[in-house]
Length: 460
Image (tube, rainbow, N blue to C red):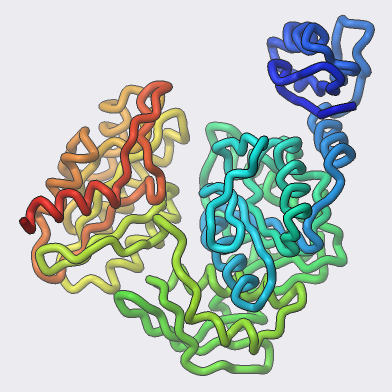
């Protein structure tokens, strides 16, 4: 066979095609044969030439691994609702600063060292976790380019669809659990079950599982699946924890407890207590697969934040402006709670909610922002194919003191005009994204760039 394909349009002569069950199944199978497939696998079909399998998604994962069998010598997956991207970003930096050739993949794409990378002949999709064929092609690409350490984000969709079921993992982490993606999973229990697949079906139970005792329910569920749990967080029962936390506008200082050892006044150039949680998770992962804690601590001051995660943009009118990717109820609450503690003046928040996603969380996010921010501006996020005005109105049911401005650009302009000395302007929801999605169209837009343009014009 030449290649494994799960998209019939990409099939070429000599390829194998795995047909995922869908309403267009028979049409996809016919197209694959027409394009030159030498074999087609499916769970059912009226075509007698098709090889029937019990689970097409698992078959795709297994065949992708068979075709692209090499991977970096050390691979780690991270799941959870919030923090996956930051933990992966921090872990890649820890490895790099301690002398390893490291890479990461997730919401922001593929990074090798500190550089974004687009491999030739691999179309990396705009997904947190790519399809199994692309994932194994990336793994083989990294192996061939002598990358030895790799960490990637495992989304609940990917776990449910068995995209990474054939990756050999050396450790895995569960960051936290909040409500998200119920448009896909339907219930919170189904969402959690998908996340736990990482520990139940993929990670061998003698390999380290990283979880926090700060959430005893999640910890116990993982402990039942894997007794080799390395715990992190703020609870005193965690193996790796932070105490005596001091937060300032551009850094955090804390005492790092690692088992019986204590590293006083450990400093990181990150914003907020939430980032302490993420760095603790990264430390737990790095130490669980072989790094000495002394070596990790020695380079923590070099760690830099991920683009669009509690990221400082600029000073303006005596205040400070930040952007953050937070878009879940817990994410918004954690981000604003952290900024509230640092803010000497008014906390101004610009936010919205994505279309074609959980409608239930819109009014809840509105209530959370209403309880924490002093000035609220509801605007468009990525409406997608939903009516943007309807999304904003659903958010507004949760917050009664908000200003509604449809244009995100005008919302930012309005928020900046409201700023006075000591104020913080926090722009939530899109973080690193350089687009807005209206309908099926992606239009160029980046929160940080808009802030800097307005600041530059107003300081001329």
